[in-house]
Length: 252
Ligand code: PGA
Image (cartoon, rainbow, N blue to C red):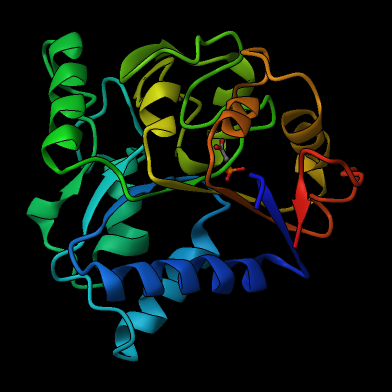
């Protein structure tokens, strides 16, 4: 089936169930699966659903390994606003993932370039990413790969756009949203064996249409996903409303 495959769901809860089904099946067939995980508001229903399935005995995370897509520069792991704190609160403390199997770039590392290289190496040593779960920013970013980022980039330090900092203001107690982040690169993401992009809400409709049906171009980083053979886009009706039928996109 040509990729991407688009699955349109009623709402975020149904989307979370579908993505959780994929993770449940993967972990059943590969108990030490390697997942790449996003932060932001989009994955919150997914993390709730995974926690529920863990408590119900449906998913065992004992041997699963995870790599987060990104982290702010300058925040100590676990400090408020950090993605490490976000993941601890929304997923890691709620399931039986082992702390040593959960990786997040260290935004407080003294040598950030060395930290980026170390992160890439860790992913390689884990055997690569089996399934990357992504959200999409209003400007089309995936991870923190902002518009203009080459599709060749691997894990690197980025200057976060004012627009993206404003979208992330909700996670911080003050206006002090960091201006830099470490992110896996688009090449790192495209190396994953399978990718799921989640998009929910009317405010994602325009960018989703540009990513899936506009030019494949670094000005819309998520458009790079169309270069990958195994991508599923799970979008609610609000986010999918501008997507027309096309040869490039398989509607499920
Ligand atoms: P959101 O962020 O889930 O909070 O909309 C998505 C993203 O910026 O990747």
